[in-house]
Image (tube, rainbow, N blue to C red):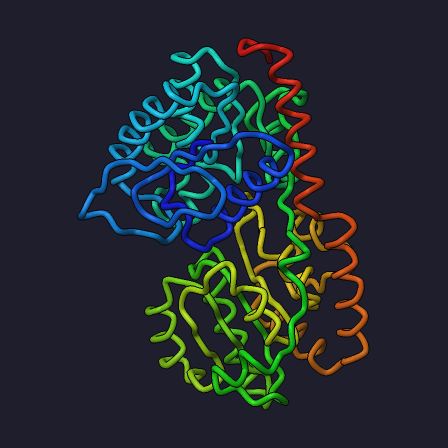
Length: 388
């Protein structure tokens, strides 16, 4: 597996990489991960890292002009690893991984599977890194098309992502396979609320909304703070536990908006501790406004039995179905309305909690995803590296 990211850093993209590898190991496959120098090794998965670059320490998601030389280093690391490991198949995560994987495929003569977690140009525009339609945007759009063509098959982390590949990028329908994220329901499960609340100084009777993930604009954190302002002005007792990073600017924003007494920030939460912290909440929220990326945190919310409020998008509908609570897309006012209504309805919360946990167990296990991925591998290996 190629992971052009500071793996592992307790965020959604890394969870997908780790859980796919773990599920495949459980099925008897030998999986190795090549990644940047940053991050930490996860148990049971052999990890190869590039040489340390002392001036690069970014763990947060998003584009960077440092990426080109980091990816050249990753190509070299991957080639050295491949000479000893001799892989049957390259599984490349993200577009940078697909780009590196295309060269590895030529050197090694093995099939390339591209694990697409959203549009490259869509993500860069979401982060404000490039402007849609600009010269840079057109350059990266051509790169995105080249990576799509170079892969022998593409798995996407959402059905909407697969449709986007076929309709907008012209990828043959047979080449694109939907493989949405999953959750380990033995690890992510409801825990008692009190332990984390005591640790954070939150009273047991305070109605608490939890968020866990990267903190930035396209994850909707600005809109979440706006909703907190509205709820405070309406006299709502709701409090918010916002877990993730980078959090410094949002702490300051909460102070400026007058809701620092309503919004508690924890910073980064280790993946292994996430279920315990999530279980402190009564309601979960994901105000993500990207239409091209998956939303893996929702699987963890479901497995922890948390009734969940999101914006109305095809990706959110695919994951939550009829156990989600939907606000009008990008509307902080309606987000506040839906949160307040759910907080005031304990019977509805209990029903959504029960059915959400059931949905996680029956439809979203990583074990099932691993078997589906194994099927894609076998098809590619039967076709040979030139297959389409």
